[in-house]
Image (tube, rainbow over all chains, first blue to last red; front, side):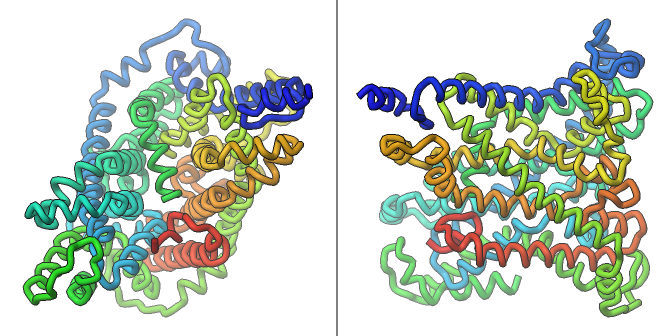
Length: 293
Length: 327
């Protein structure tokens, strides 16, 4: 009977083992391993942040030491430089444009693909999902030539519009099942009340889809914010470059001044990490939702 | 745009089957209205997608049969010569193998590690939310930031070497990025650091879908924790694992930013991937025709893989990003 009691007591824990003692000790071991690995994950970020408070001679003398003394100069210089803020602004502008285009256009298409019946609908949807397989890298050469032809090189739109296009597949893949789940009774009721298809879309479906729309917006925004290759090819004016380009350029420009690179890089992580803290649930929900449907 | 019309045009024929709408007469005016509505909803997305995603791929296929530097007239037709050259270039083959190595390492090492961590984080554990956030945090950093951070840490006699020294493993220190035998494994570690959080999150979501009763029942029947993990959890996690493998393999085939910044594909091409090879030839040597051929080959490899994977692996799963087309 005692064993049964133990089992019952342990049952609520998902990994109930034979005896509580063994379970606890194994659990402790795994716990320690988990914390250790979390530490390994954190160290590179801490290295950058803390390293930014050191001087380059300090870093050269002992690459793994703590700041002694702490210097704020690297951070202050970066924050006082116009380049850093301009790059933030450029990234913000491009990511916002790309997000607005991808989500608005994607929502329209997802509506048609989820709530209209027409021949070729599934084929069309498949066509969009194929886009999940295209990295910008594959399309980079012809895309560059295309943008040159239509005069969008050295123009933020030349980055934002293709980014929006490449965000469309994931946007549609997430929005379509969501819009499908909205009960058709609502649509029938709206039609009875005299709403047009568009009226239903605009006044009922879109407001109900806000959670999914937020998710796809966050995903489109983060993706755009992190793009490297496309802006690298399109933007040549240093005043127009985005933050990732700035980080890469800064790190090659100041090779001798590691401390400054560290400060610049760690400040460049701030928007991404802040965004992550604010929107973690959306990002996680979106990524898992996109995969599970 | 022609395809929009065809698609929209077809709509009129079966407006009656639009189950959600009340039955209505298929009058010509209604049909026209349906066509216009569909055009309104679909045309913007389709033109954006066709113009900036599909058109470039088609253009690449066209450019790939010319010898062209991207500036002059496109008149030096060379047929399949660019493809022949690519496929017989040992550097491209090397790049392809590096992609393949990343695939094998991801599935063989990153997946088990992520599984272990996901199983750990699936328990009721104090601080598990914090741990999950920590593992996921690098995922939101750009590959550029990741590359710059690790580039600095991996400098000879830099942070990583120093840490090895301090814990008494100084003898294991290598030229992490300068040794052509080591570099690819170093890069794999960096990639794992950045992307393992994504795997964990995905697997956790999958684990949460498995009813706890199943394991409780197994425990009552005397199954050990390992047995119920092996015979209940893992099989039920199958769909999630298979989707992760799909995304991870596609990702590995397309690796670019991180490698470009950390090594430029070097030393001596030891860390080239197909994508770095492509950009190197296209934009640093202005071989646009040749680079286009590489792009087409790369796309074909991804596409064939995706089709085969869906056909033979994902088919078993009722749900999946690409398989769940019809409901």
